[in-house]
Image (cartoon, rainbow, N blue to C red; front, side, top):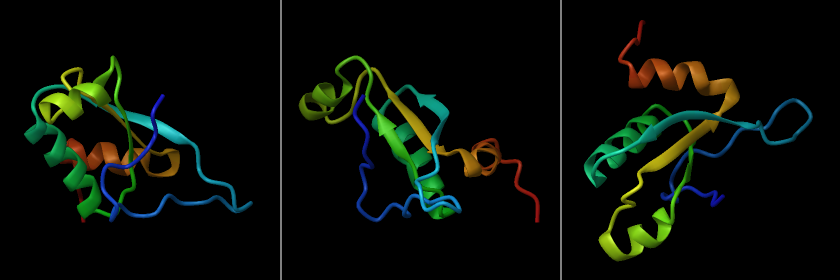
Length: 95
Protein backbone atom coordinates (compact mmCIF):
# COMPACT_ATOMS: atom_id res chain seq x y z
CA UNK A 1 0.00 0.00 0.00
CA UNK A 2 1.16 3.48 -0.76
CA UNK A 3 0.09 6.02 1.81
CA UNK A 4 0.36 9.72 1.40
CA UNK A 5 -1.54 12.85 0.70
CA UNK A 6 -1.30 14.27 -2.76
CA UNK A 7 -1.49 17.79 -1.36
CA UNK A 8 0.96 19.33 1.05
CA UNK A 9 -1.67 21.63 2.52
CA UNK A 10 -4.08 18.84 3.51
CA UNK A 11 -5.10 19.22 7.16
CA UNK A 12 -2.87 17.44 9.65
CA UNK A 13 -3.83 13.92 10.73
CA UNK A 14 -5.30 13.93 14.28
CA UNK A 15 -3.94 12.08 17.31
CA UNK A 16 -5.95 10.37 20.03
CA UNK A 17 -5.66 11.08 23.77
CA UNK A 18 -2.53 8.88 23.99
CA UNK A 19 -0.81 10.95 21.30
CA UNK A 20 -0.99 8.15 18.72
CA UNK A 21 -2.32 8.81 15.22
CA UNK A 22 -6.00 7.90 14.80
CA UNK A 23 -6.37 4.82 12.57
CA UNK A 24 -7.55 5.43 9.00
CA UNK A 25 -11.01 4.30 7.88
CA UNK A 26 -12.01 3.58 4.28
CA UNK A 27 -14.25 6.31 2.88
CA UNK A 28 -14.67 5.76 -0.86
CA UNK A 29 -13.11 4.30 -4.00
CA UNK A 30 -13.22 7.00 -6.66
CA UNK A 31 -13.35 5.80 -10.25
CA UNK A 32 -13.40 8.03 -13.28
CA UNK A 33 -11.24 10.85 -14.41
CA UNK A 34 -9.05 13.27 -12.55
CA UNK A 35 -11.88 15.78 -12.13
CA UNK A 36 -13.90 13.36 -9.97
CA UNK A 37 -10.86 12.67 -7.83
CA UNK A 38 -9.86 16.30 -7.39
CA UNK A 39 -13.40 17.43 -6.59
CA UNK A 40 -13.75 14.85 -3.82
CA UNK A 41 -10.33 15.56 -2.31
CA UNK A 42 -10.82 19.33 -2.48
CA UNK A 43 -14.23 19.01 -0.82
CA UNK A 44 -12.73 17.06 2.07
CA UNK A 45 -9.93 19.58 2.34
CA UNK A 46 -12.37 22.51 2.35
CA UNK A 47 -14.09 21.05 5.42
CA UNK A 48 -10.80 20.38 7.21
CA UNK A 49 -10.89 16.59 6.91
CA UNK A 50 -7.45 15.04 6.36
CA UNK A 51 -7.15 12.15 3.95
CA UNK A 52 -4.69 9.66 2.58
CA UNK A 53 -4.94 8.00 -0.81
CA UNK A 54 -4.11 4.50 -1.93
CA UNK A 55 -3.44 3.86 -5.60
CA UNK A 56 -4.46 0.24 -6.35
CA UNK A 57 -3.40 -1.80 -9.39
CA UNK A 58 -0.26 0.17 -10.25
CA UNK A 59 -2.27 3.39 -10.12
CA UNK A 60 0.71 5.43 -9.07
CA UNK A 61 2.49 4.39 -12.27
CA UNK A 62 -0.63 5.24 -14.28
CA UNK A 63 -0.75 8.62 -12.57
CA UNK A 64 2.83 9.23 -13.67
CA UNK A 65 2.18 8.22 -17.30
CA UNK A 66 -1.44 9.38 -17.85
CA UNK A 67 -1.71 12.14 -15.27
CA UNK A 68 -4.33 10.25 -13.28
CA UNK A 69 -4.57 6.72 -11.86
CA UNK A 70 -6.69 4.63 -14.28
CA UNK A 71 -7.71 2.22 -11.50
CA UNK A 72 -9.05 5.06 -9.39
CA UNK A 73 -8.03 5.89 -5.84
CA UNK A 74 -9.10 4.67 -2.43
CA UNK A 75 -9.59 7.49 0.04
CA UNK A 76 -9.12 6.99 3.77
CA UNK A 77 -9.95 9.49 6.53
CA UNK A 78 -9.44 9.36 10.33
CA UNK A 79 -11.99 6.96 11.82
CA UNK A 80 -13.11 9.72 14.18
CA UNK A 81 -14.12 11.85 11.17
CA UNK A 82 -15.62 9.10 8.98
CA UNK A 83 -19.26 9.99 9.60
CA UNK A 84 -18.62 13.69 8.90
CA UNK A 85 -16.80 12.84 5.67
CA UNK A 86 -19.63 10.54 4.55
CA UNK A 87 -22.19 13.27 5.25
CA UNK A 88 -20.17 15.81 3.29
CA UNK A 89 -19.86 13.55 0.26
CA UNK A 90 -23.56 12.63 0.46
CA UNK A 91 -24.56 16.28 0.90
CA UNK A 92 -26.33 15.48 4.18
CA UNK A 93 -24.99 18.54 5.96
CA UNK A 94 -27.17 20.14 8.64
CA UNK A 95 -26.51 23.31 10.59
